[in-house]
Amino acid sequence: MALAPFKRDPTFYPSPKMAMKSPPEDLAYVACLYTGTRIERPDFVAVVDVNPKSETYSKVVHKVELPYIKDELHHFGWNACSSALCPNGRPNMERRYLIVPGLRSSRIYIIDTKPNPREPKIEKIIEPDEITKTSGYSRLHTVHCGPDGIYISALGNEMGEGPGGILMLDHYSFEPLGKWEIDRGDQYLAYDFWWNLPNEVMVTSEWAVPNTIEDGLKLEHLKDRYGNRIHFWDLRKRKRISSVVLGEENRMALELRPLHDPTKLMGFVNMVVSLRDLSSSIWLWFYEDGKWNAEKVIEIPAEPTEGELPEILKPFKAVPPLVTDIDLSLDDKYLYVSLWGIGEVRQYDVSNPFKPVLTGKAKLGGILHRADHPSGHKLSGAPQMIEISRDGKRVYVTNSLYSTWDNQFYPEGIKGWLVKLNVDQEGGIEIDKEFFVEFGNARAHQVRLNGGDASSDSYCYP
Image 1 (cartoon, rainbow, N blue to C red):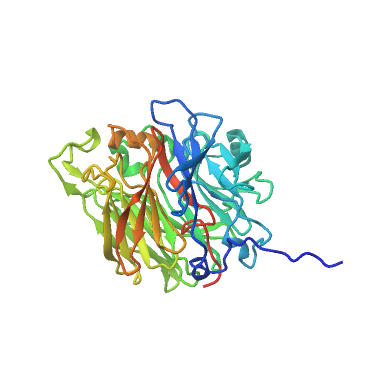
Image 2: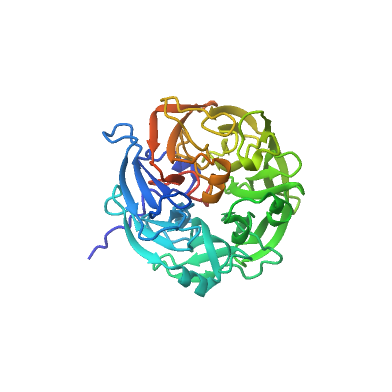
């Protein structure tokens, strides 16, 4: 009797170059939240039609309504991705489930996008006490599909202090397995993480512990309660091997974007604010001469203004850029940067990662610009989360940072939106005036594209 041939998931690709030739996305999944607003309703995951040929293009076609309030949906990811094709991976997996944690609740929703990707359903809920019982962690943040399991970062422990770290889930049952770290050294603060799989290196960054951030930003905490280091780990030994300080004056080392080409041991990280002058900066971390290094490659200054400012900024008479997200195209050519304070998305050519060149700007909302959408829609908030299509031709942008911080920097209120930027492959970005999605009084955070996107998959082949 002949066996049926094994078919791998068609959305898995061995290399980023191959992934760039994949079919364009037709759906976007968007984390939307009422947490932090005056409306006591559960958060939800919106399904948005992003196929220009569809009759429901740029419309919300479905909502996955969650059963609890105050989860604070933030970042989320897939159960499996192209890392399954690595030598130690599990190629029998399929990209099917969205792993959606509540940052404030520490609850995890497993959402099944099959058989109908336009109408996903909640398959399983992992309650917070299961997380703390197995790992001691809480306040779950970044999700990455590894070749050997599902990794989720956590900002702290169940008491809201540190250390923060990484929780592991089983690939098949989604059961919490426990904390990932074996030897963390003096690492205490946590936030994002990613890796270079062939070289078995993990990189982690630092925000702050939950008790510091959850009630809003307090300026007196900036000097000594927010992180400014990144940490390098032996991925197999689960041991921290090095740490690098990203400027003594800088605070909040957030998003990590390693180069997608696995032969290159380097990547970018954004520093949100300088204690010296309120500037933001982007650093390149790299391995050279047997050690880990980091170098500042972009600095964006604060903008002086006599205009109206929220209370938290009035003493400074300036708008800090507040670079809160960055994202890197799959060909490692363009780095996209969100200036959540000023109200811009910037595109940098990082073909030479040590010398980025500014190649495009788009103004959207912001404390400084307060720019409307070209369709005429008023924009509250400013560009925050960025997601890039696999072919690098489209960039999707949402506008919420974190509920209590939203309320401080945009006290007039934030109504969620999703916009799209079209990319000139020779350099430049333009706001798509035909694409604008509103989420009413709910706020919008991370976007995931069906089939994968620039920040969901990691690769083992160049």
